[in-house]
Length: 286
Image (cartoon, rainbow, N blue to C red; front, top):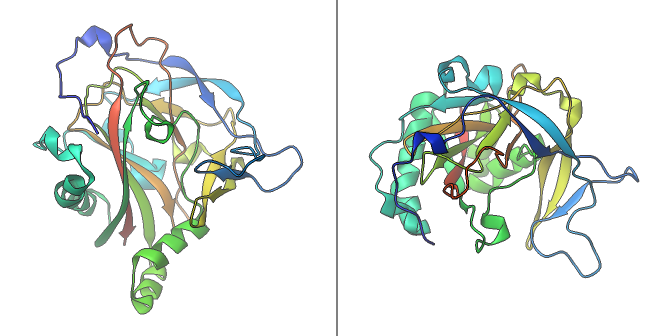
């Protein structure tokens, strides 16, 4: 893995303001069957997915300067400018260093900034690089999705809390899956992240997708386009900035999750830095 050192970018290289972009949404299988997606190479003769991804033109609002107006309970995302400062670039060069050094910082970040949180269990991270030679699964994901279903979230609690009694007690309270997303070579000049305010997303536009991996099957969420959805992005995110994306929530009177997707910004100039980022997913209890 290679992480590009942080560079000072010309402000002219950072697209800002409202923009119209193309996003790849979800459309259910025409035969009415269960949506299926293979996370790895599908069996011979089977498609990687049996559903459709129509391309829709969407207007994104730039929330730069209004970051404090959004929170996890009302919008299913939260901006934390400058909250992850002082982290050396070199710790992102290996998974072991990420787990040993970055995980504790993410855990404390969530305990400090997520209302009611009293316990955090980190279970996954991914480093993404928008380069021509990066494996497909390591590139920014250009498809609107919303990560976990309620069933998958409960399964994660059971699988990552080894004591069944402890797991049962935690499942009886509030639990969330939160994705902590941040750039590694900011400010972001290309392939930014778009997200829709959770309170603008109708549950009927979210579809469980059977996600088939080599050793087990889970569920992810496809999102159908609805003109009532409010799409936005946070321009020019720096390495110190972090974006909390709620993937699921057991509390029933708040938005369940935030759909999101990387997007190709038509304003990114030739030679713009390929985006590099890390996302860390955690179970947050309380």
